[in-house]
Length: 445
Image (cartoon, rainbow, N blue to C red; front, side, top):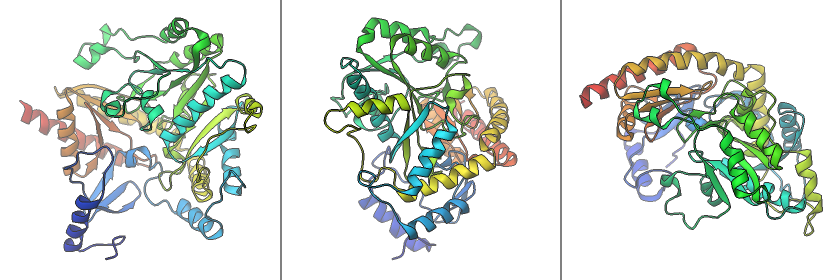
């Protein structure tokens, strides 16, 4: 049976039977029953029954340009016909070169060297290895510890999990690699309990310098941080926080790694999330998700020229001993170049900034529901915190029943639509969320 096109109801049931028999879904209960998605266009996806959903989770933040953008499809088709890819460990390709140059043009001047991988988790692994090896090659082999934020999330591979504080994500993977230390999340614990915001006591960025001093600067390789803690609850770093982290890193010879896999390339209203603090330039930046708009797997690790040049001293290779067969896949790089063309041409970062204000304003109305504890975000990345994980799941389910997809993460509903969403569509999302909250509130009363 051909399963890539339209399916009859009987065919759909048969395919879903195969799903239950053969496919292992990520981050899903073993008995989960998911809709069979068969089509997508713009901000909408459609299941096998023909029902359309407005995807306010953007395929888990991948679909920056929505589904099936013609410019990306054209670029992928042309490159696939010309040369699908070539291993960058023994050759090079024009799309990989052009994309590395393009990223250097988007980032501040010092960030000019890009190493390609296939996913955000792989980008984290590469960034950590680069940071530790950099110190080894520059005469400080004891610098191995990576400081992270407790509620940060950096991926599902082993070092990435070790950099992540969530027991839900870490449990079962032990023993995890050592060499990690976490500071407290910069948010008020009282807010999660419904405490008035005027009573907030938010852990400040000074704890980074304190942690470096406590561990000993000679032990610390890097600070790894998200400008907005995405999976950890959509928690934007307070204004000025990242600038003080940068200062602490500079004072102690520590590298700053900005995890922009979720926030980079327009999502927060700036091209990169770290740019919300003027003058901050990381030593290493990871990007993913928006890089190809979800059309193909690709992520990137971009470093300063100083970091890159240190690897010439590696005694075993004279370069970076790391990578994957499909690092810098030529067709994926062609997709990324087309995606960046659209983001730039249509000023989608500016659009995210403008519509983000609308989104947060409309979501703020949800505070009238007693099950809603907080609303926060930056650009087109917002979180609605509910009183419990169960309530968040119920609201997400009610939204789906009404034709809108949002992402439940614990007690927080993540709202992150494609950057091409219209204001009318955005208001449709928030109206449906309002209805869903009212429905669940009535049932909880």
